[in-house]
Image 1 (spheres, protein in one colour):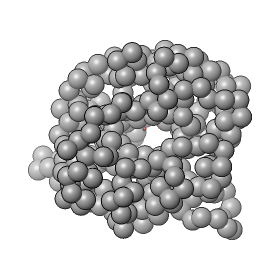
Image 2 (cartoon, rainbow, N blue to C red):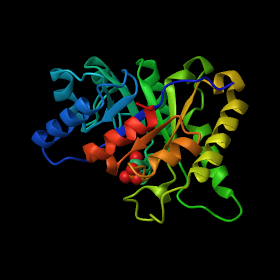
Image 3 (cartoon, protein in one colour):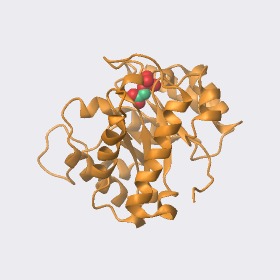
Length: 258
Ligand code: PGA
């Protein structure tokens, strides 16, 4: 059985905005705009240096998310950031396996290691899955199933509630090279049901029902209403529109129903 829970909206700022000053302004606008939502609804996944600054100033109802993390615990890994570092200053979500990282060579094995490290550190892993393209015969379901199975390989059911799955078809991400069109609520809905079924096969229905499944890909203030009504998503991962405070606040308010 699927549990009823509040919606979760994750802002993926990617490598934006340009300066700390702009980042502070954007964060302040979002923080003020969503203050009527309870904690646990809005996550801002900002670049690492900005996260540390936001943590110091107080984040209000907003939770902090990282966009990536190292696949090893600690050590001689120039340029990497460890889970313990993020956890130590209040980051509570980590995006893992985003398609932009997979495109730069991140492997299923690394993704599985990252998911495990994140949940062991008592943070939530936002695991991104999604096909690069759709074919007539429906092979893309197999692509997504393989991603889910590989990323969760070895993860015990007791840890599954610390995983959020974000279904992001790559062709529907606003800035992706293969961008064709946003996904329809129905496109998202059938894959969300399918992912839930894969999780049920792996862990049983009741444990599978503990996982929140989000949709991501060109979500904005205009399409959020129909996505909320018909996609079956329990939240959204928002890229481009998360950099526009009024658009993002509309998304949060429509999704949360505030
Ligand atoms: P988009 O990005 O909302 O700009 O399509 C979503 C994502 O890549 O996480």
